[in-house]
Image (spheres, rainbow, N blue to C red):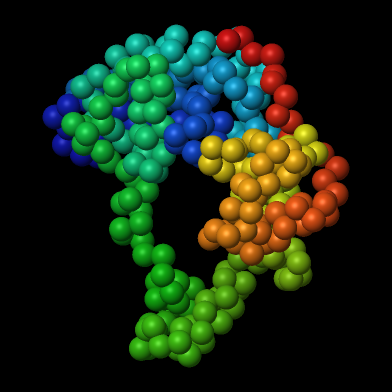
Length: 272
């Protein structure tokens, strides 16, 4: 399928990883379709052992479990093969500029190799989508109601337009839940293992743990005993109110009950 005038091969690829943090998460699957200037496309897919446990919430998204990758090669084992497959290629995909390219560069850097994307032209389908299909109130009103907004960004007009859009969405999508609680759950999916809205604090093995920065993975209970000044720093800093409230309760020896099931931090037997 040719959609641009190619003068070099194009590698269109997608990556599945242990999470969305391009600096700390690891690649577990990468699939690349190499489209030459002339000739047939070639597709290669690598399933990779990340060397760390795959979080349950991530498994729920892509279905790749620790057991599935335990006998797979690590990234370092296939890095040269992947590098060669990308050689001389421009890059394409959906959302690659914010995720796939950075996490791929990080994986190579982690093993002392340099994957340079700066000299490659990048064709991100998501960026075209966002540029050509606006996602603002004016576009929504026109799409759902066939109307043009009058005096956009006047608060009252925008509020009225929002009502029209909501009404139009319910007319178009008959399966939208009309029960308020059900609709809220659908629109605002919340990770049951996060204690606060920003996910700074998280349940691991039934314990509240830090989920950011250098202290990530440390138990709040241990910090109360061994480094309360770190928790007091959180209270003084620019964190959300609910985060601070949980920290203050911990310092006051008030602890919430954990959910019935929480993710485990225990290492899984991997072939590393």
